[in-house]
Length: 205
Image (cartoon, rainbow, N blue to C red; front, side, top):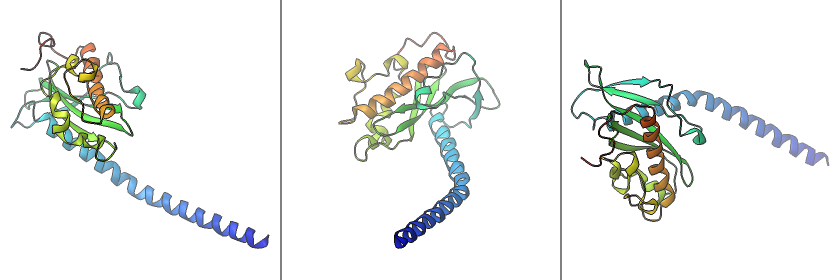
């Protein structure tokens, strides 16, 4: 009995030391991880926005839109809109936002650049932890996300759902997640009046 108690106390002490050590490591590395994530987001935003005005130095300004609905509440995230312009002119040439959607095994984040008429200019997978060899293939633009370029919200539907976008083979859930998350983001922006009228009923240019 005494031996069992001794072993139990030793195990508890080891667990306590491990927990303290882990907490210390996390406290030291968390800020660096946060900085790296923010840097990756800024780089992705610059890359996707380049399609709005190739060759120009772009300016990014966060927008606060009171009438903007949040389609990503179920993912515990918010639809944040960034206005894109070409200095010194401050007039907008488009927007960038991150679309969030619950995939097969993770919340997939897609960076989207959209023109002021509501036409998608470029997309990039910012974060995913889908099944390796299957849903994780979403990071390859040719597999799916390059197919969104030139589309408007109403055209962002998989073929299986009545649209014209073919899902990745064996990855319908991940494909639908990305497609629907982009569409709902665009719809929220349209309802908030962020797109210029006149071209939102069009298709590819």
